[in-house]
Length: 497
Image (tube, rainbow, N blue to C red; front, top):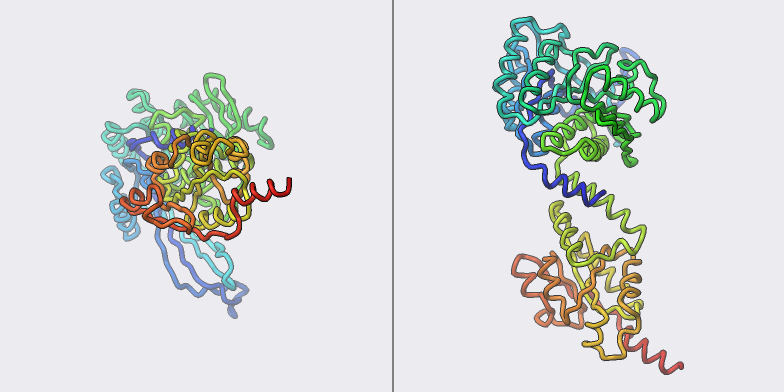
């Protein structure tokens, strides 16, 4: 599944995503929480930094831009300084803001968070202050929003509705999005509010409530996976959805599809620093994926990965495709290292895995040899090679190649055994076997950042050295542990026999 997800992620392209919803400004006031005030039993925060980010639907748009999507945004801001700030950030990010209206009758929604540090420990949010009006936009403004949606949808591959219950996502606006999406044959996805009546989302392709929201809307108290699937099924039928998705925080997501498919998609354990923004991240990746024609199952798997990365960061943070690829590769790598056989790849497989690692700026190290009888000199040499980069690939001479180089009595151990022993070393990430007398073709296939050979070689005699240096790579001559060699081991065994 992991390698397939890499292919899925690589093939997404740059879809056009239309985001409709409540725009917000998230303001963070950072400082040191030094002591308790003498005026009242409250923490005294000595502020030293202020940061402003986009929130709500504009956060979804920001995340989508970081994921390399083309984004158009529809919503409201006030005719005030905070509204100007929101518009400037949106425009600086390259998000199409032509559909954003300025409403002089309401303030820009602002969430102001105070974040304190104590004794150099991890910062914690102390207080949040909200500036907002939650009344529904007036009818004229709703009509203007619908006109903007009509225009922006002409090039859209998907419509996302980010409903924070701040007055933009009225039943009229939501159903206009649904109607347009049905006419265009594209998906419309809603991240709903907390409440018991979800009738305004009827006809959406899918909705993404969290555990509590889905419990309230379905009337089912979600305590386990069975409950989650039952709640998803009820929402699916009641709202005439194509699919219902329920986010289950650390337990992943539940999916119920109109075609009868259902499933729980777990997420791997994370070091959770802050869940703020995780729902927006899930929404963003689902939208990106479904816009690109990816099926719901793979879209959810990708959203789980991005949401997991997001909660490891503080505040509402963006995630890139490169970070997602790195996370998938890391998961694959951890799985590979549990079984040495998973680290032994053929040439096509090694080329594919190297291409993926290079997308995440991992430094690839390559070395080669017969490694007939592994000894302390080999182990020291390979550990030195590993220190030169991130991923160590060992090219192993095949049995035929060894015979041509060393004679008919070699190798002592067959290539499968030699590869398994090498793969069992923690410092070795992957092993690939080659039949040629030299690794020249393999080096040209891998294009390593670092080529390693023993210090008993001169650089000009190292096969592939000129090629590696021609594109900016380097050659490292690893220190040799004298007195250790396969030939010496064989001679000692003969003497003792």
